[in-house]
Length: 119
Image (cartoon, rainbow, N blue to C red; front, side, top):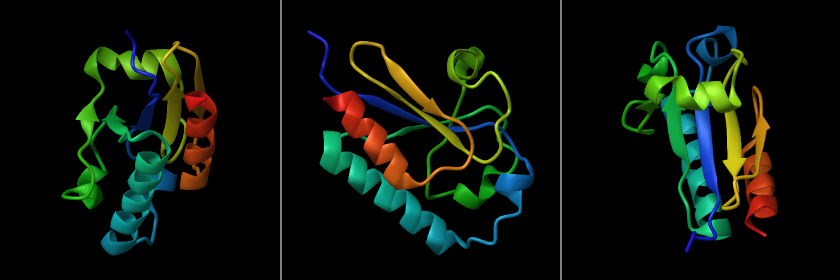
């Protein structure tokens, strides 16, 4: 039996002008990701999977987000074929349908699409 839970992937393509010029401090970043995860926990009792293509620029997330290397470029190949600036995300339903959002996004948008894919 396949669990009825969606998968949320937050994708970091590598350092670019959008994700490297932010004036956000570590406390703001920590709060933002905590709120993201708390919302996903309330919606579907899940945590996002954080995947990166290139780890340059990820130092500001150290101790806040545990990023994992995109194995063999699999996530990039299937969902993020181009380098979209900032971070992107995709939500995959238990049936394999998915919705991807490219570039900068609000956590509320992740929650909305997760709700839709969890129905």
